Length: 624
Ligand SMILES: Nc1ncnc2c1ncn2[C@@H]1O[C@H](COP(=O)(O)OP(=O)(O)OP(=O)(O)O)[C@@H](O)[C@H]1O
Image (cartoon, rainbow, N blue to C red; front, side):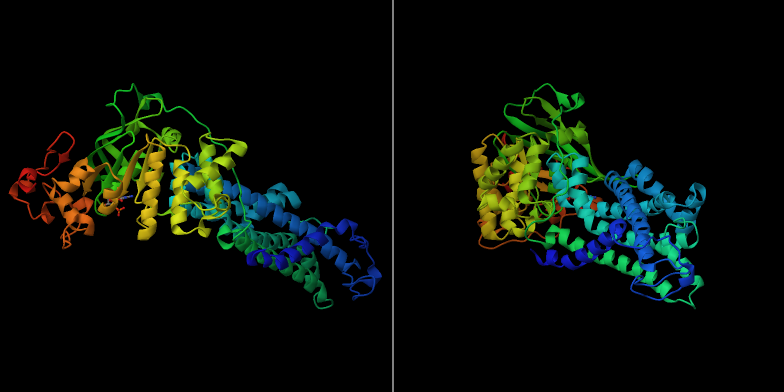
């Protein structure tokens, strides 16, 4: 048992005691709560009436326990009903945004404009006093509070890498909401439930106190406080007991939810833990509009021609990637290299339909040849279409495995998710395949690692697990975005070796390796595409480009790494220009020692020094 679980024992026992006493009221040897004994009104504690008698001589202890039934039933009932409705509204609004957000969260928020007690009074006045109208009133009152809490937690979670990674696996939105977003919004939700139970008990007591809640002679703590108020001078203890019961129960629930939050968060435990919801995925067809008869060049897997990506903001459009062309053939590894900000990542994201909301492909042709030989226009594909080809056809590995793996799901479960989402395996086959995949990516003791949470693995092991998720469905094209950058050099070498062995095991798989590290490119790539300031500046077979760069930027990059072969490292002066401040002419000209006037006017055309090579430098012959 973990520390967090041990800390749960005390509040859980207290809460269980409170609930047991209240629930078992009918079978406890208690006097009838309605039987009056007027001659003994306000009598103090005795052997038959442990807490004394009230203004009608009724037993205070019995009324306290029976009163708790009404209070607790109303409070817990309304808190849970509001939690379920509010959570659904918050999840949908936060995940889908736009119109869905308007009709869920924003609509619910209208209720918050009304003072809570007045709203409850209104509902109870319309429907009449009683337990059920009160539960309804409190549910209406608390639903928007949950919706807002879950909405803001969902907003935070939806933009995290592991949610994007789930999308990359081809998971459907409802599955992502259930298995990834919901478990992550659980902690604030539990805190909210404890607060709402407490607040609902207070409002129930308040309304009963006003005569609008539980109807006498049914006892409730609110009614007991109301009755005791009139006789405070004669019997002050009558006020104390229900007040203590109310405060004690509220504190017990707050205490329990607080500890529950810690105990259920897998990041705080090392064994056991919670797997909340699972679902099933299905295969479907890519829309007709995005399919074409196959006419690609032989063996071509992906052909990107003149793709542009722009950011739309408040009616303005800012071009981030301009007329990029990349080709990947079957079994080929293409490295996409360039300094930070050159547009490598968003190019990769565009190919998997994972561009952030504000960015979109604004031009060019992006064609991918699916397993069945049909050509898919990725530029025309909608989210549903991408979902069908992700993981099984195109898959992605992200730089930060710690952020890309779902922290609340065990490793094996995450690999299994990917397998199930694409119908790759079923039932017991899934477990066997998970272990096989974890073994394939070189995780030691894969059976045990399958049961571990991401935080229990080292950085390198997490990256291996992430790669296992990405290759679970044997994608035809794997896009790896700086998969070794966050790792130390020894582990980097091991992960590169893993990519090499994966390529050997699946010789037909194409690989786009996004990196800024030319040493890595030399290790792994067949071809290299060099990007600068959102454009491809040079492209060709890796060994030829390394031996004879035809663009000053490639040459400068090579000179700036120890593996470049120079004795002295040469830094490239200046920085990559920002998208809204691109220079006229060649974008590299302000940093280029070979630049002449001709470079500063008009965008340089693409030249082909050999059929296999491209460069965007007008002076490539002179500087070669
Ligand atoms: N969501 C966004 N909204 C607006 N601009 C963006 C967005 N994402 C990226 N950009 C811009 O697009 C350009 C290219 O970014 P990108 O992340 O593709 O570069 P990168 O070459 O992958 O760099 P790094 O190696 O640092 O990730 C940058 O100028 C960046 O500021």
